[in-house]
Length: 341
Image (cartoon, rainbow, N blue to C red; front, side, top):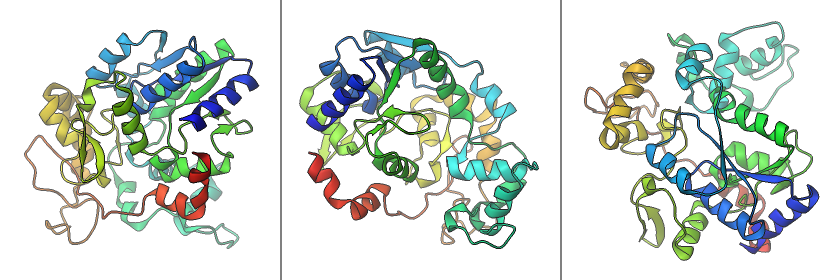
């Protein structure tokens, strides 16, 4: 925690205390806000009411003092209608959107996404290539894009930031994803002074276990959506949701083992589940991702293999476990976290 406090103090000093916390009401940003206000008691928190939060998250946010609520110009229904559904991951959705929306401006990047090299034959990293297993989504009968987060969350918070002239402190963890690990490394650590969008991520070197230990040891209030924090096989876990975020988002759902979050929504929030599948059209999206040519036992390893589910609870099979981005981070920078604590 001392590391996080030092990064907060440095960020605040650099900006003459003109800073704010981007507050989602989730467990990570709850811990962040508690630490920030131990250093800067009057620091404002800004909550983007996207309309995609669990009711329990919104109830909790209302109990937190000093929270400013901002709202997007569009609803999620309008975003998926106008821009497209978020599927698989931000990276895959962006690649699919570019390939399905060709322009002269994106001609070169489209060629790279399709072939892994430039039109001149210059080889590029495999990370630039759209994997074969996702190419069937090019024929999806619905739009796909990565821009829902920009429209629903980033734009209203950025608008507030421009008006207030304050600088953001955000509760993201490098361990959350490869994109966040890469951003943490490229931007020079927790305080990204020279990034395209400067921000502080003082919990950057934390893991989910660090967050859960902090909540358990400090007993600070957090949203009831997570349930209790219990220990199992030497690790802490929540008895309710593990991650919250946007409840209708389909990013990463293929990675979830067993009951995925849309399936779980049918059990915990049946009205929202019906709204998600039928009113927002996600039943069509998830049914399309259930490729009928795949073997039912999932032996092909394809995300589109169907699980045995009820008629209203639909979800793709989980992919095999991969090395976590934090494991890769530690492999490259093994001494960094230890030196920071």
